[in-house]
Length: 375
Image (cartoon, rainbow, N blue to C red; front, side, top):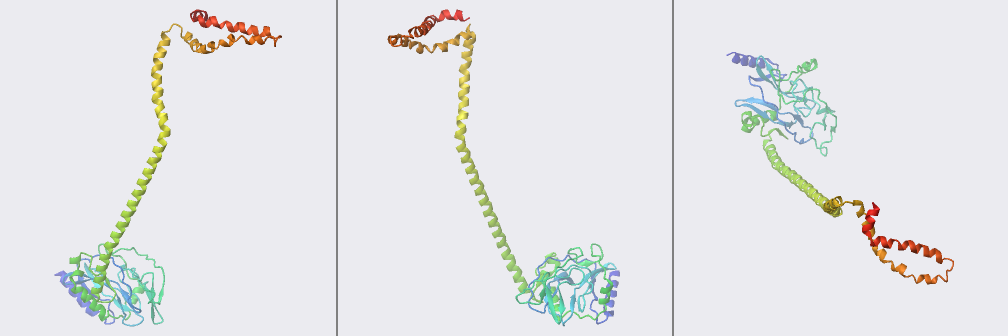
């Protein structure tokens, strides 16, 4: 009952608003509007159009999304102040948008594309012609020449909240200047804007109860042009998977190329390692040989240990020079001394070395006798 009384009071207040002001309260409910959807601004259709952001309206079937669109203003020199939802006395009331010489308060809602929550940075009137800021508007400079580029810095927190006040709402309040703007002469939305909202109301795909915050059409190039926007959205959706598939193919090709390069590098490294292995193989092969040689050495040492005179075996290798002893025929070749007549002064000196050379002969013949003498 109290809710009905509030609604009736708000309705009476709406009729009490002067006809020159269109920032009046429209409808009020107890359910907060959904978050603002994310969308792209269409290209401006021609010179003289101004951007009006999308918003959630309320109908018999609940909230429905009115797409953002480019609109021709009702007259030169006016700007669009968007409508917004505000919390007051336990209900959400919608404050309708309007045209006026200045941008008024629209709840601090960040609608984007120049409407960052306070004022408008998307363009300005210049000698009867509207100039567009390319930094925030999708403008084709080949057909639109009244442009400028000015960076926009939003001091407010960027979010998708669509209402002011209440739990989770935006806490912005109108400034003294904006309150002054609210008392200026305002112009109601154009017939094209009103028809645009009615078209959205009649489209079930725009209802929050159906799309759950994701309307089928989020923005249009002109008011009411839902079919072209839907066709464009469909084409974009069809092309997007193609682009994703192309990216997937490119990623797959890059992965395969990387794997091929890695495999090639691995094969080359393996081949290089195998080429280097033969140089190392002999060293590895020599190790078993050394081990094999070490095993017979053990019995040899054992034999040496068992021998009573290990040092006696040392001369035996010296006995190998026996072939040199076989060279004794050299002394046998004593006919050389026949030359002594020619070398008469040295016969005695050469005879003396011959005598010591003869002494090893008995030593070599009697090895057994030398062993005790060596000790």
